[in-house]
Amino acid sequence: MTEILNTDIQPDTSKAVLASVIRDRQDERQVAEYLDELEFLAETAGITTVARFTQRLSTPSSSLYMGTGKMEEIAAYIEEHGVGTVIFDDELTPSQTRNVEKALKCRILDRTSLILSIFVQRAQTAYAKTQVQLAQLEYQLPRLTGLWTHLERQRGGTGTRGGAGEREIETDRRVIRQRIARLKEELKKIDRQMAVQRSGRGGMVRVSLVGYTNVGKSTLMNLISKSDVFAENKLFATLDTTVRKVVLDNLPFLLSDTVGFIRKLPTQLVESFKSTLDEVREADLLLHVVDISHPGFEDQIGVVKRTLQEIGAGDKPVFLVFNKMDAYAHVHKDEDDLTPATRENMTLGELQRSWIARANTPCIFISAQQRTNIDKLRRDLYGMVREIHSGRWPFNNFLY
Image (cartoon, rainbow, N blue to C red; front, side):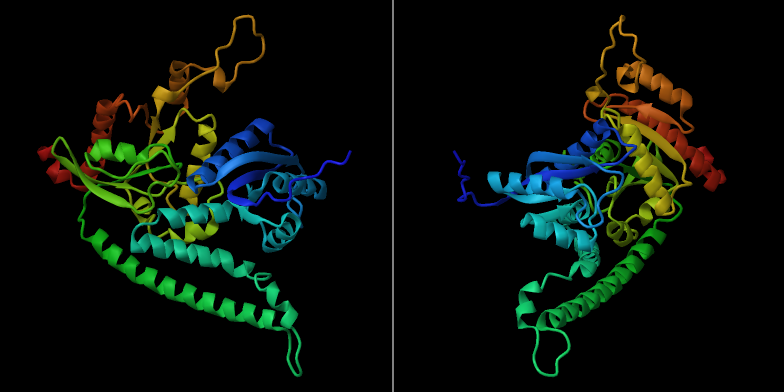
């Protein structure tokens, strides 16, 4: 008996399936962590994940990203379950995007476009909105081909070259290029204003909070500066740089909180937010906040270090702040288990001792939520700021 599918199911763009290629040197657990993050990104954008599809390939397919058979499997699933969105855990090329759209006939998001959509939702100030809009347009520009294929039927006409669709694409490209140029000019004006503001802060020591997104930087900012910076358990809760004057034992300094970094942060965003990240480049000390409870926290540390190098802040003094120690959990290893111990088997105490022993930079373990070790963090931070201040103003040391 032939099964009749329900063809009345309408695609729901708020429901999505995730798709990812497993490279040769990747293990499935690492890919699962990456997809957990992609699901969190989707949730932040208001999209519910209903399924995941993975395929092991040496490199993604240049035409479809995944193999034809896997694409057919995804197409069958989304049609049967009324899923309206497929999200890929890589940035798709313009040709891949066009081919995937034809194969799946639904809304296609790659990692870059998903992050950009979140930034659009999160941008509050005119400056942040301008930066995000610039990044969006630079992402869209090479992907305009195919957006006007509905006009290809109008192609032709005596003495014409190309069709209406092609002419529409060229017109659209020109409009977008003009908007990009205007936005860049607007950002230059704002950058000059911000540079003047920074130059007016005198010789105060500058400390900047950096780290992977959603590690608790804004919560820590509120604790140290006794301010009320927006903090939420979502990715990219903070886009605009917040600067506060902090005084510890009569020693004043400036503390800034900036946008969080993330794996595969879109190049367009790095470029457009470079001016925002001037606070990081001009800082005297970086507080690198790490979520110690995250299973891939060491990978996240690597992402932050690479991003700091990209923006020209890789040589700054760093104070490693391991946050969320209250949420840390380890897998207990039985005495008769003879398999080699892994990092997941380490207790918090063992992990602390190993990092304190091997870290080339000062580090501390805290819980911003539970306020554990916050007083020690303030004392250590005071000592570092005082040392920088003493080198800059040696004749003012008697004040502190």
